[in-house]
Structure formats: structure tokens, C-alpha cells
Length: 466
Image (tube, rainbow, N blue to C red; front, side, top):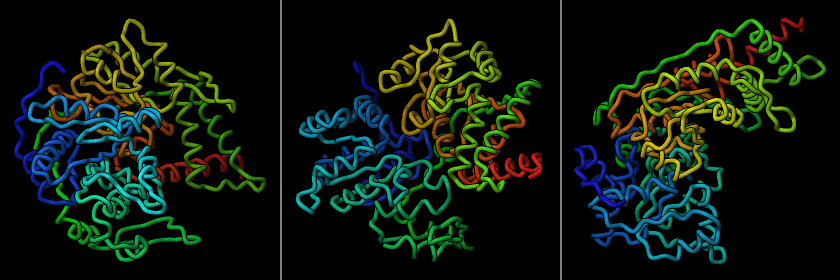
């Protein structure tokens, strides 16, 4: 960057910065677009200047690790931090770690690799005295290798900060593991099982928890338990953004397509049905069926060899109409590879790019891309994309509420000057409507898929006389 920007923190950013400085182990639950990255870097700068920390590790989603933290450090005049991203091959990562820097940013999926570098015999020795876990919700599974690595880095650090805008996307049960890597069990206890039994009614089968519902007053008691180290900031209270308008394009399927969809749904269910006519609804079978049906409404299906075959162009035609009438570059979120390939081939007269990494992000924000195709998982967390446009199109929403909210916040965030318009293209009377309803009522994606499959199975088996 040739020029740097003067930083004038808003009141809530100053509050968040002080929170990090004054709480050695803390979490910042700040909605998307409130500037968590610059706030954290400012606090890190002050802590380093005060000689309270010397070497900081930031674990972030891969795309964020590759660009966001280094870009933000270079953007602001008041920061003099040496920030490096520990990415690339293992040899490249080791070379970066050998550099003299203040802040080392690594992709969360490389955290276990980094952990193993510092195991001496059976003892773990971390060289980092401060750890920042960006998108804390990705550390909600205590069985994950990355969670165990984060726990050990936390044990070896004097300061730990967790950052997220969506601390409980699937419910309160997500909090225990996240808080453990912050305070090592001080507030919610050392045992996940005891914590669940205390605050939730649990239904188990073979010692596996199938369903949990919070007990009365559980939410109030849990939030009170962690309130002394968790700061919550809401965008509507602190930094009103331009409005975000959601427009649903509910498409009526032509008769032939509706018939084809029904046959495809029936055949897919029958493939999952045993000789006795029983189709067991599990999380895995529900995901498989819902994905197959969503592929169909998207316009193509995969065969057993992984090749796709086009079956309709209904959504594609609607997308081309939206792009043709757009007054700014368009960010298109897709769910399946065939959707990106077919969209790229169909759009003409526009600069079309499929998001791959930092170069695409910079070109988008600099006005070098007219249509950017992105999978929500690759762009959902932490990327600043608000300077490139204000129109989002969901070619298919999927079922993941957290990814949906985070992806929309790539444009609807601090620095956006225009009304953000979100177009959602769905086929009426199909799995698309069920996924959209699950997103809108903020329901669990897995449970919603299982409910939708159960209904489809009952309908198909009844029609077949089973």
C-alpha cells in the first residue's frame, strides 16, 4: 500500500480495545462489520509497546489468514506491527516462523501442524505469549485436532482472545468448548458431560447425545457465568449500517421439470430404502438426499464418477437476468462446483472470476471484477469485501445458518456506503424452500435436513404403497 489510513476509533471500538487490554483471557462477541480485526491489532500494538507480550499467534480461517490480518496491519497509520502469514507448504511455513515478527497468522487447519513443531518429547513448549482465535466458533468441537491444539497453545500463553460474531449459531451447547480454550474451564467447568447435565435436558442413544434442549433459566445462568470476560457488541446498537434488503425469487418449475424433480426425489429415496421398505432417517442419509435434490434444482446432477450432467437451466436464467439488471458488481454464492462452472460459462460481456484467494479479493475491492463466484465456506469468515459492490445473489442458500449470515456480512459491514441487496433464487415446491425456511427461522441445519427427509420419505413411500 502506498498510502495508509488514519485510525479514528468509534466509541465501541475503543471499548473493545480496552476490554482486550484489561482482560488477559477474554472473548469479543462482535457482530460482523464492527472492525474486530483493527481493534485487536490496536490492542496487540499497545500490549507489545507496554512489553506485556512479545510474540503473538493468530489462528484464523485459511482465506483470512492469507490476507485479512496482513492487509489490515498495512492499512492503518497507527500500526507498526510486523505481521506475517504462516501459509504455503510446510517448508514455507517453517521459513516464515523463523522470521523476526510481532504477529504470526496461521490458518486454523495448520494449527495442529504448528503444535507438533513445539512438542519436545512429550512436553509442549509454545513460543507465543498471546493467542488470538479468530472465528472462535470454529473451535466448538472438543474432539477436533485443531481444538486440542488451541487448548495447548492457550495453556502456554499469558493472554488469549477469542473473536466471533456468531458465538451460538446452533445453540448454547456450542459455548462450552469455545470458552474452554479461552479460560481453560474456569467458568463452565472441566467436564462437558457435567455441564450438559447441569444446563440441558439430553436424549441419548448408546451414550451419544441425539438432542439437547436448554433447561429453564439455562441461558441466563450461562451468560452470567461468562459475562465477566465476554464483551458483546451489536451492530444495530453501535454502528448502524445501510439497510439490507432481501428479495426472494421463487421460480415456478415448468411441468416437465417438476415431473423430473419428483421422479429424481423418488428414485433417490428408493436407493436408500432396504428390502423391507424401510428408509432410516439419519444425519448422513438426510444430508445425502438433500444435497442430491439441491443439485437438481441448481440445474445439474453428479454421476457416480463425479461428472455432472445438466438437467435444467431455470435458476441459471434467473441469475443472468439479475446480473444483467445490476447497477454494481455482483457477488454470487454457489453450493456445488457444477454451478460455478455453468455460471462462468453462461455469463457473457462481464469480467467473471471464481474466488480463489487474496489476489481475487484485492481485484474485487479495486473494481476489477464484475461477477465474483464464491462458495460461502471460502469467503464467509473475516474477509472485507464491502468495497467491491453491494449486490449478493444466492444461487442456493444451503442449510448452514452461520455460513449464510457470515457470507452476507462480507458486503453488509462497516465501510459499506450503499444499500445491500440480497437475492435468493429458489425453486418453488422443492428442497430449496425447506432450506430457506430453516435459514429464516434460524434452525439447526442438520435437524432441518432430517425433518425434511422424513417428510419426503413418508410422501414417497405412501405413493408407492409401502
